[in-house]
Image 1 (tube, helix red, strand yellow):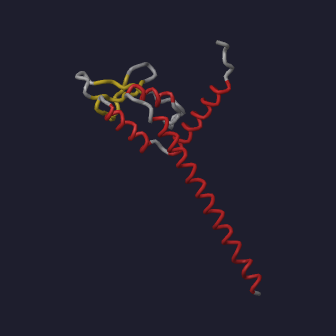
Image 2 (spheres, helix red, strand yellow; image 1 turned 60 degrees about the horizontal axis):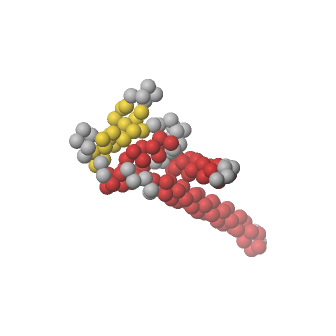
Image 3 (spheres, helix red, strand yellow; image 1 turned 90 degrees about the horizontal axis):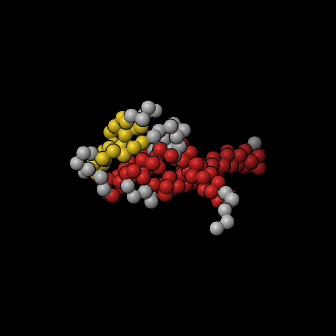
Length: 143
């Protein structure tokens, strides 16, 4: 094989490798963006009730938005247990129990940030984007 043909033959796999590396880099940027958008959605939530409402409204549950949660304080008010709201309205406690204060709410948000699967975060980010776009495009009534 001549030197020119060898260089051409070697450049094709290199180009394919570079394209694959670029694709993987883009995927990593999308993952980071989905993580950041999801975390930004959690950030302003000050209390357990707000977090439960956010999760209930979101499609980040991996069930298309079917998961409904309610934060239920203990009888002494010191802790909160997240309960799944069943179709009949009854509650099923989860294993997620936190202190009933801002530190406990922060722990709950951290758990969500670390444990919600990437695809669910992407779904939630897309949902948030669509909601903001719809709100921006709604006709405003004259004041």
